[in-house]
Image 1 (cartoon, helix red, strand yellow):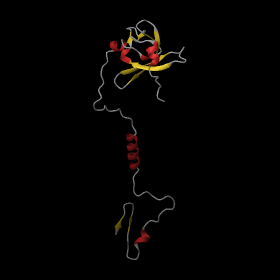
Image 2 (cartoon, helix red, strand yellow; image 1 turned 90 degrees about the horizontal axis):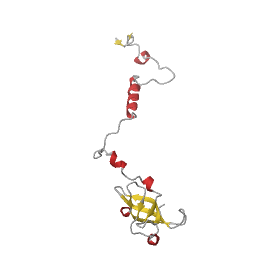
Image 3 (tube, helix red, strand yellow; image 1 turned 45 degrees about the horizontal axis):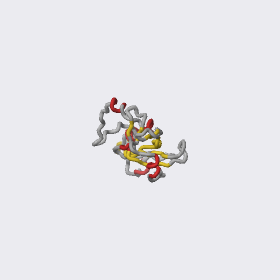
Image 4 (cartoon, one colour; image 1 turned 180 degrees about the vertical axis):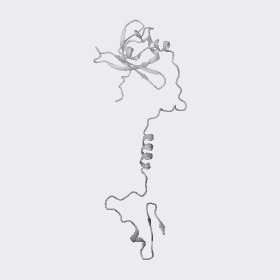
Length: 160
C-alpha cells in the first residue's frame, strides 16, 4: 500500500504506476512547488535596494564652524566686479571685469582698460594682491599704475 498526502490509493500488481498518476491539466504549466513567499522576499530585496539612505561622512572631510562676523567683513566679488579701478592719484584706469582663483586663493584680477562704456577696451591681468580695496568695498585702487601702462600689457582673452 502506498500513502499519498491527499488521498490513499492501493497499488496492486495488475495496475501499472503510470495509470495511477493524475493527468496534467491543460493550460499554464504549474510552478515547481514554489510557495508565494518568494514574491514577498523578492519585493523586500528590491525595496531595500532602492531605499534612499543618508550619506555617510567621508574619511578626511571635516566641517568647520565659521565665524559669521568675519564673513560679514569680507568683500563680495559680485559687488566688486564692475567697479571702477583708480590709481593712487584718483585717476580712473579701468574697470574690474573678473577675478580668477585657484582652489585655495584669489590669484588674478582681470581689468578692462581703454574703450568707452565697455566697448573698444581690452582685458589685462594683474595680481589680485596688488589691488587695494577700501573697508566698505566701494573703492578699488591699483597703486602706481597708469592707464597707459595697463594698455601696454598683453591682452587677455578668456579661454572658450
